[in-house]
Image 1 (spheres, rainbow, N blue to C red):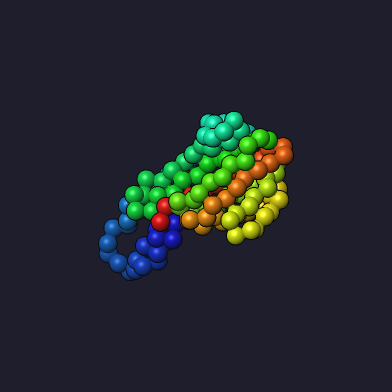
Image 2 (cartoon, rainbow, N blue to C red; image 1 turned 60 degrees about the vertical axis):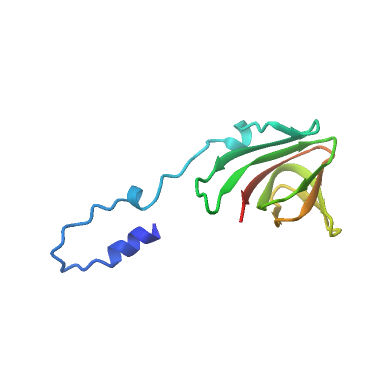
Length: 139
């Protein structure tokens, strides 16, 4: 929206040029919406008997791809994950016990936000279940 507004502000009101035909859709692509994704999107099993992960949306930007989706872990085998990209995660439901190789340990609950840097190795565990929403970017 900023580029569109800047374009309009840069125009002179005394100009003889015809009004611009630039529209908001010309300035940016349409957003995407997945209604009630938290309750209706079911990520597929990715590891062990209890770890589920699925991308909801991914960008088409080849130079800085970004993706987002849901991660669910149920009681059972811990998931150890080595990050090859940067990720942000917010815990939506349930709980996780999250630790890394530096010795950090957190009992995470709904509302907690995490940043996992590229190269980190994270262990996810739960005594019940946990659901998180992630956004990851390869840099």
